[in-house]
Every structure is written in C-alpha cells, then in structure tokens.
Amino acid sequence: MISREDRQLTSGKLSFTIIFMIVVRAPMRIGFVGGGTDLPDFYHRYPGQVISATIDKFVHVVINRTPLVDKISARYSIAETVDSPNELQHTRIKAALLDLGIDKGLEIASFATLPVKTGLGSSSSFSVALMKALNAYLGKKLDKYEAAEAAARLEIQLVGEPIGKQDQYAASFGGLNMFKFNKDDSVEVKPILLDYRKRLDLENHILLFFTGITRAASSVLTEQKSNIDKKFQTLKEMADSIPEFSAMLLEGDFRSLGEMLHDGWLKKKTLASNVSNQTIDKLYDAGMRSGAWGGKVTGAGGGGCVMFISPVEKKAAVRDAVARAAKEHDLKEFKEIPIHFVQSGAEILYNGDQLPTTLA
Amino acid sequence: MENYIRNFSSKVESALKNLPHEEIAKALNILQAVYERDGRVYVFGNGGSLALATHWVSDFNKTVFGHSEGLESRTKRFQAIRVPTTEEELTAWANDVGYDMVFAGPLQNYLQDADVVIAISSSGNSPNVIKAVELAKARKVAIIGISGFDGGKLNELADAKILVKTEKGQYGIVEGVHGVILHLMTEYFKDYFDHLADGGGGN
Image (cartoon, rainbow over all chains, first blue to last red; front, side, top):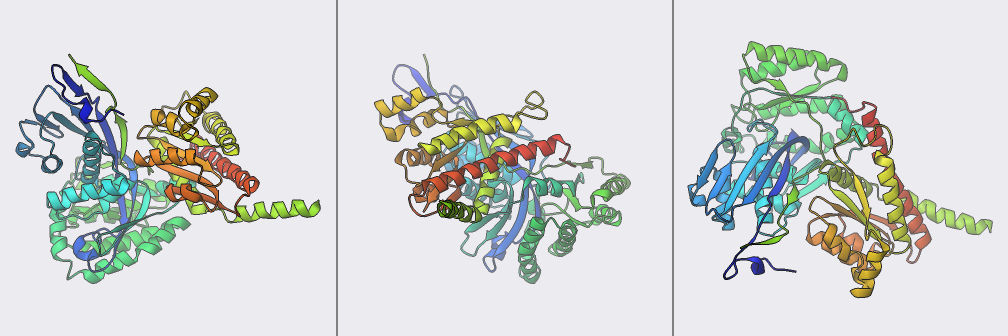
C-alpha cells in the first residue's frame, strides 16, 4: 500500500494525489410522525421518536481537488471563490472546512433534485453528503452512524441551528425507519421492513404537493424550541404514537395511517404559531374535503410540501381540489411531486481517489 | 431407512421454521439499496458454500433481468459476481500468497464504495471468509452474512445476520437451507421487477 503521505509533494517534481472527484448523494425524506420530539430539549427529558422514509429525490455533493489553485470554491445557488474558508458565506461548508482543517485547493458543488426549504429535509441531506464527501477526501470512510452524527454535529453544534437530529439520521440510513432519541444522546435505528408490494401500495396512497411557499426550518423551530416546556405533554403523545403508526404501516392499514397523520398534524400545529398559516390550512382543507384520510405539512412547517394519504379512487379529486385552492391563493410555484420510496441512504457513488499521478 | 429420512427431514423443517425473517428482510433491503445506486454484489465461500455462491450468481444474473422487458429498456444494472471470478485467480492467491487471501485478495481490487458483499460460511469462522469480510467492514461496505451452527465470527460482523442455527457440523442441513434462502432472494427481486413491468408501480 502507498500511504497518503508517500504520495504527497516530492522534491523536484510536483507529485499529487489527483482526485478525479468524489461524488456523494443523500436522499431527501418524508417525515410521517413524531417531528419535533427529536429536539434535544425534549429528548433529554423523554425519549423522542419519529418515523420517516427516504424518497427518490437526492442532494448530490461533488468535490474536486484543484492542486494548482490555492483557493476554496463553493458552488450552490451562487458561486463563491475565496482565499480561505473563513471568507465563505455558506455557513455549513465554512464550518465543516474549518473543523476538518481543509484550507485550500478544493471545489465543492451541490446539485439537488428539488429546491431547498421544501420541508423534505434537503438541508440535512446536504450536510450528510458533505461530511461523507469531505471525510472521503481526507481518506476516511464514515459508516451510517458516523455520517449522521458528523452532520448533526456540524449543523447543531458548529453552526448552531436550532434543529433536531432526525433528518441527518434519515438521510444517512435510508429507507423506512423508526428513530429513537435517548436521553444520553444515543440514537436507536429500527427499520420498518415492508416488502415491495406493501411499499408500492403505500406510495400509491400518498400525494405530495409543493406549496411554493418556502421557509427556513429554523424560523419555525426557534419558536417551537422555546415552547417545549408548555407543549411537553403534546410532544410526549406524539412520541408515544410511533409504535402504533409502525404497526399500521406493517399492516398496510392506510385509513388508520391517514387518520393518525391528521391527528399528528393537528397536534403539531399547536407547537408554534407559524407551523401553519391561512394559505396552508386552505390547501389542507381542500384535500381533506375531497376524501383524503389525513395529511400533514412536511418538515418543520410554515411552508414546504403538503402531503396526503388518500384512498386511491379519491386521488384525482384531491389533486383537483388542492390545485384549485393553490390557484385561488396565487401560488405560482405550486406543483405535485410524484415520489417513490428508496432504500438508499447517503452513498459515495464515485470516488476517484485511487490513482497517484505525477505532474512533471 | 424411513426413520433416517424422517429424522433428516425434520431437522431441515425445524431449521426452515426458525429462519431469521427480520435479518433476511434486512438483506433484501441492502440489495434493494445496491440496485438503486448501481452497485455490485460480490459473493464468496468455501467448498459447498462456493458452489452456492456460483449457483446464486448465475440464477440471479439470469433470472432478475432475464425476462419480461429485458435489459434494453433499463438503464440500471443489477450485477452479482462470484469472488474470485476464475479458478486461476483462486489458485494464484492460494499458491503465491496464502489460502487466507483467496477472497480478500481479489476483493480488494474489485470492491467499490457502492458495492455489497454476501459471505457464506457454515461455521462462520473460515479464516479466508472472515478476512474478506473484515476488508468490507474496513471500507464500510454492507455485509450480508449467511452462516450456520452458532454463526461464528461472520454472524458478529455482518450487517444482515442470516444464521441457520443448528448443532455444530450439520453441513448438509445448513447448506441446504442456505440454498433456499438464496433462492428466496432471487425470487423476491424477480417478482419485484415482474410486478413493476406489469405496471404495479402506481403513483
């Protein structure tokens, strides 16, 4: 084996480990129940529990080494090229690079299937993919727990976002899972094992609509966090509903799942004043009046996507009604998002860090 | 004679009754994820287990995509590969380096981040199998471990721990049931792709 050090700069010639890019992708997710109980202020008092499933919408992070350019570039919705990570505007890329001691010669770009702030966990998917990619760049491979924890640490500790850990775990592990957040900060992951028929059947009962309203999760969660004392009982009930939801998933009892989702949504709306608003309520009511069994707003709330569980024969009616309500409220970016569940978690799709090459 | 046959059959029956359903389900999910990311499945074992690996690879590769719409209509692949791929490689590693490297040696060349391994060992303790499993573990590649007896080290290291629990030395029963489990894995994906081809995807 040639060690990384052996491949570095040698006298006379410029010798590099040329990285032909690292490509990592991480899936977005739909949270079904228990969102909010993954905040430390709650789970330090009572075990938090959530159920979520990853979907076929991904965030890709690409890293490219630039041995001849002593700069850091970050390309996302904008492009930044700076002399040192300190000057970056992107808070998470900046914090990650400073923490890992990477200071130059790197391009980082991200590509996502869907825009940010849709309530599908994309920002944590980005963080998981970023940490997996940067560690691979340093020659270290992260397993699922390590990648989830690295992303959670980045977002919560290093950047100080008021969020929980469920999205980092969902993106890292992939699939339909139950996550339990314990007092001692440990996390238990229990997959809910549906065969392909049940999984496809569940997909077939779900409708997902992007409202066109975007918001940062932190704006909702900051208030929610300060309300945890007042809302402790509600959150506890949400966490306690998880085993039943899991049982209904395994049974394929979609009506009960819809009803539990509806119940969870009503509870969640009480957690902070901005979880819902008039426009979101109108969209939701339109779907429910057209025959959906239940639904919710994905993510922290305040915007993002509205999801329904509906009888298959009512899907067309729900679609029409929600689209009409969106038009009435002039939601120009409103769109249905077809989804399939995926088993994939955060994965290194390509790692070109194999060949030592010498530039004469 | 009757008694002997009945006795053997009842041991097989009891092994089948006690299949670790949840671990098999986890293995199917691991394979599903490999398919989604276009990774490959590497399979290995010694003796009868190597025969099972080869049999599975040929079945899986032929059956899963070898019907209905065929390969032309698909952009994704789902490839299973036995390690080592040739007897020449096997004997070269065994002769030149050592028998413990016959799987890990070739595997360290093949294995990429998106892949997965299936290790088959009745005892779960074959040094060459464990060596290859440790390589996969170090590279954070998911491991489906198919073992017998008490599961041995393989069952400890695997992410999906498919253990056919029997008394020590019951190779016939363990290998027979391993064959059934491997067929189940092939059938599952064959049915899944058939179902999709029939328009069962919904949404």
